[in-house]
Image (cartoon, rainbow, N blue to C red; front, side, top):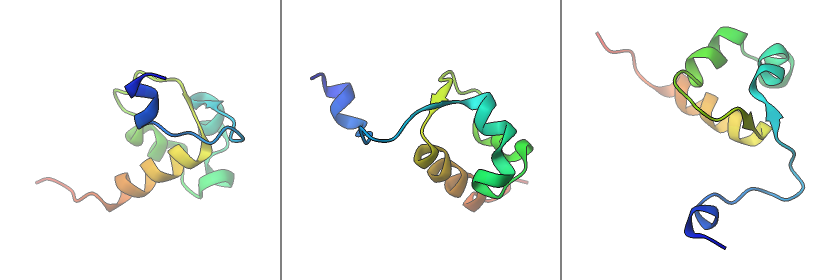
Length: 68
């Protein structure tokens, strides 16, 4: 196992979904509008994520302050 994979523990039972699918159902799954996911994943090169990964990123994004 490479160090890269060791640093990214992902549950074997958790499936990955395409970002566009998660975006379509963002209100139901995460309680946020699709536009929030646009902000969370702005400039992200990856296209598949687990629901847990997305929820963690949303939480971090929403807690960030606004720069003036």
